[in-house]
Image (tube, rainbow, N blue to C red; front, side, top):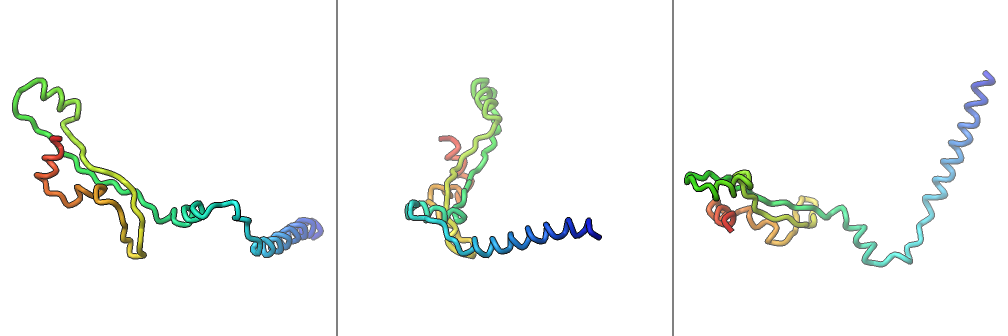
Amino acid sequence: MRKRAMITLPISIIFAVCIAASFFLMNIKPDTSHVSQAQKLAEYTKPAVVRIVDYAIVEWKFVNNDPDVDAYLHQLDYRTMIGASGSGAIISSNGYIVTNAHVVEYLKAEEKDIAHAAFE
């Protein structure tokens, strides 16, 4: 019985001190006078910033036997990727995101417009 008490008593004392210290530390606020308003705002809004990637892959099928064109398309693995990426911000609890138009330019584009952009 004494061995158990010799282990349990110190652990109980440490546990009680930790609880008391946590109540004391909860009421202490860090000094933020040296942090600029912009830094505070950036830290507050960081969870709402998202990365947006919008792209399309155009696969090429070449019928003509031109070796130069075939060599070029082979370098591209017979694919061209077009699109954009950027950032946005979540502005509502529904998940609405605000971003620039160029980031989602190809999202609603028709296939002929995507193919035309792949030629550029």
